[in-house]
Amino acid sequence: MPLSTSTRRFLSSAAVLLATHAASAAIVLGNGDSVNLGALMSSGDRTVIINDKMFHFESFASSQMQASNFSVIGFVSANPNQYGLYNVGFDLVGPFGDGSPGDGEVHELNLQYEVSVLPSYYAQGVRLRDARLTFNGSAGADGSYARVDETVIDLDTNTFLGNMSVYDIFGPPPSTRYSQEVDFVDLYGGGGYRAFEVNKDLKFFASTQNDFATASFVRQEFSQVPSPGVGALVAAACAMARRRRA
Image 1 (cartoon, helix red, strand yellow):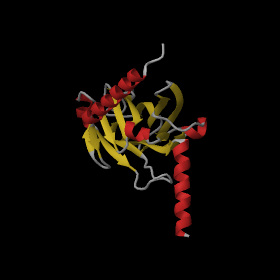
Image 2 (image 1 turned 135 degrees about the vertical axis):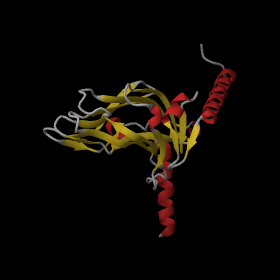
Image 3 (image 1 turned 90 degrees about the horizontal axis):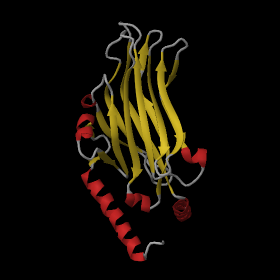
Image 4 (image 1 turned 135 degrees about the horizontal axis):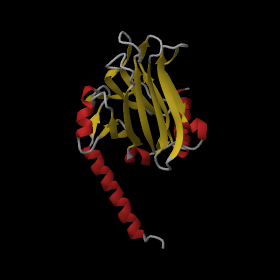
């Protein structure tokens, strides 16, 4: 049975109120501002707002590393893209690594979170486009490695979008990749995404007592685009501005 106009208006208003409440309970970080990860995970909301993005940290799991030893630092790119939109994300900073070299165990940390465009910006046509993963991991001695692997899912459709990995593997053979970027709009088409679910897994293994496998920061950032209709308006406005300057 179709919903009445009054019911649709009520549900729409309720959604706005819920979104406003969620935003008001969140921790707001500017570029370079930080919050302790342990304190964040212990808070009732577990939500951080950075620029036009909301990050909801769902779970932290590690038998060797403590959340209180790490910080979440807001990241906003210095310059906007051609649409006037910034890359937005965060750094995880702290003593990542194998704390017991040579014990034969992989020291692992798993973090799961959601990133979404704030409702007011989504209504203006802002969409997520891609994800970039960067870290400064390092490992020494044969068999040792430092790596971060993550899975990205379209939260609204529960559709798998892709995997990303950065690593320093001592070898043999040695292999290193400090940054990876995946453009999901380029891969699948469409006008961008409202929200991603991200599962991030950090692993460190030092094969001998005199070995090491460490990192001090992991950066996650997301670029964004206007939805197709809005993009056309932006392009037209830019063209008009160029003609005026000429």
